[in-house]
Every structure is written in structure tokens, then in C-alpha cells.
Image (tube, rainbow, N blue to C red):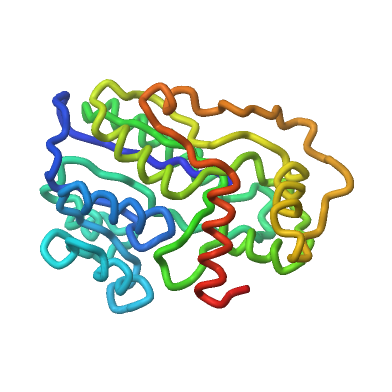
Length: 271
């Protein structure tokens, strides 16, 4: 379950800390942490939401430090160009995170992955035509505490595992702390020399590895072990994100991320 998150800037110079940036999908799991960190660093943020009247999308953003003076929300439709133009008007850079995610589908092409792949290809083509600087971040399964009032698909996947549900899927290839994703996005944006695609994972593992670790950490939960490893096609890698590590990103250890996620579930009485 990886996302392609694109960042584009106009011009060749370094972005000015404290300038105006746009975050599409700003109300989501990753987006809300990115908005929080950008505000903490003095940026003015244009964050997009699907429904500006829905407090479930807006209240946690308005509650962030600095939101009162440096956060503006925009309602957009990804298929409606004028609504998008209004959000990016005046922005020096754009963090494009917005994308619908539905795990279960009857479509034999697994349309989420297809849409992400085609969208990234279109972004690269457009950037080349328009002379934009584009950098892409490809995170694995993002976990960690959430600022949103409800859980997203990735968090719900993990929550169902903790509740003892056996999940018949092999999409897991590696995990990353959501806060490290947000930090990596800002690091890439503020590094003019950054270019190309960047894997963003603490490690690449298999489902059997992940569930075994969770069982060992939380024996009080009825997490089902996987008895047969069906992911021999996944090459395990402990240092998967060398480009980001080279830029100074320190990835959170697995135990810390899982603990913080579980504590967040507990605080919201989900477990």
C-alpha cells in the first residue's frame, strides 16, 4: 500500500521558509501531519478538503497552532480545474497528496494502484513541459498517531488486525511512521538539489514479519499469526530509503511507531 506523493515548485531557487504552499488532501492522515509541521515551520498553508462544511475534515486542522492566521482551507474536486486553481493560486510549492483510497474492489486491475501510477506519469510529463521542479515520495504502509477524528484505510487495516480479524491480502511491503513521511516531504521541498523518486520506508518486510512483531509486542491482543509465507517475491530490506537517509532523515523504529499507534487507538477508545 504505497502512495506516490508529488511536490512541485516553480523556478530553480530554494523555497523560502515561511512562504505559501498548497497541500492537497490536507485533512487526511498524512496531510494533517504535513499541515501541522508546515505551520510549525512558519509556512502559510492552503490546505484542500473535499467538503469544507464537514467538521470531520476541518476541526482538527483549525485546532493546529498557527492555523488561525496562516491556514486557509479550500474545497476542491480533483476533476474540477477551477477549484484546484483557486487553491494553488499564489503558492510557491504544491504537495499533492489527495487521492481516494478504496481497498476492496471488484475491478481486476486494482484501480488505486493503477491511478497512482498513471497520475505520477502524468505529473512527470507535465513538469517537463512546464519547466517545474518535481520530486516524488513513495511511502509504504503509513502508521502512527492520527490527528483526524476517524481512522483511514491504512489505520483501519492495522486496527482490524489488533481486533483479531484475519486479513486475506498481501499488499503489505513495508511500513513507515506517518510523521516521518511528513518530515521527508518537507525535507525534499527544502532541498533544491532533491530530484527523482524516493522510497520512504523504515524497512521492507513481509506480512508474516509484520504480524509476528505485533504478536510479540502485544500478546494481549488476538492478532492472528500467518502460518504460511506467501510473499517470497518480496525482497526484505532494512535500509530501503537510502536517498532520504542520505539527506538526514532518521526513521522511527518499528516499536515506537506501533506503540504510538496503539496508544492513539486506546485514547480514542477504539480498542
